[in-house]
Length: 429
Image (tube, rainbow, N blue to C red; front, side):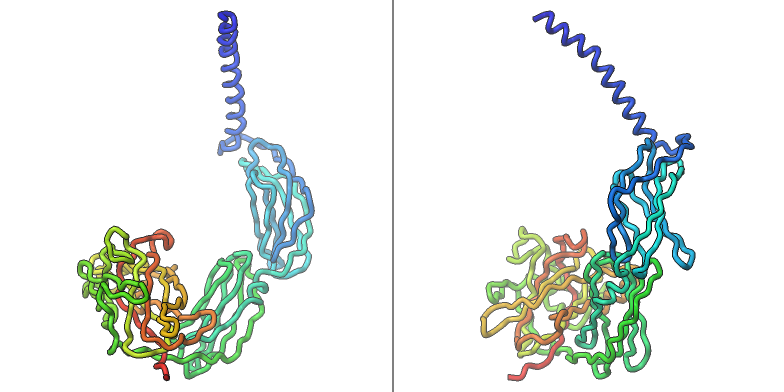
């Protein structure tokens, strides 16, 4: 037994330094890869193409084996357009494929591929000829649609590859020419053009451009007849007090701190320090503080029967963080609602009917003043944006707060609302 233990001890003494030496060698080898000033004048080997390229929309994907080189940085591809502009694409040494994008046609194009190390040495190049699929610009343009709505219209498009595109919407509103440009890489995108005169048809045309300078054909939509509705007067509106219940849904507690429930229908928006909003005071659907902020339901009795078309909501501006009417304050953040559901009460079914869900977009690329002015106008939601129309006749509307803006709309802090306005038409019975 003693001899066996001695052997084990000797083994530990011998093998531990060997392991450390091997680890040191591996660390040194890997260390060269990240050593910025490493003195290397030796170019890496060329990447090896292992199978035919895969055509993509406006591009191509190359598959390769990386060359052996201890400080290899990336595999690159380049091409030059007819206008003399060169585009370069890179894949790290961990990758086995590389996407090259940006062609605006389905002609044959030449691409060179090469390896690059951390010292800036380039390998010999490989020349490959490719024929891409339909360009992204025409692909997106083929999905464009214009949908008339109430005093507005929607422009919708699909972008399955989620590439950055600019959508140019040109329209004549009966008075002047207008141009709006929307940038997006969403797979599905919708833009609503608001505040149009429904009595005048709108002439619309749209084209698409990508970040490589490619331009689609212009899609002509001709004259678009807009839908008409009107603001529903609030003179007969009532917001039942907390404790009221309809269809097993409890009216929200909105009188927390300085907030008052009736402020949401008084026609006055919260602005700077006038203090005009409701506040749930952290009470959720059942009105118990332990339930947290959301969900909560605001129930409105319109006093008569109407068919609803759209809703406009105005957020709390805040008397503390807003130093003036032109400061952002709480708009699109903090205690305001970012996602909500809309319902109407159906007498025939004796139940709440879900109209839809709306997510208020957070403005991007605007100044603090522009955000404030946008917040003061409120956020509009069409009841049925995919097929704008009126609801069935109803006397009751329900607003269900689901999420706040913070944390990419994951926040459960959404306890304030300043004003709610409904549009539609008087029901004929």
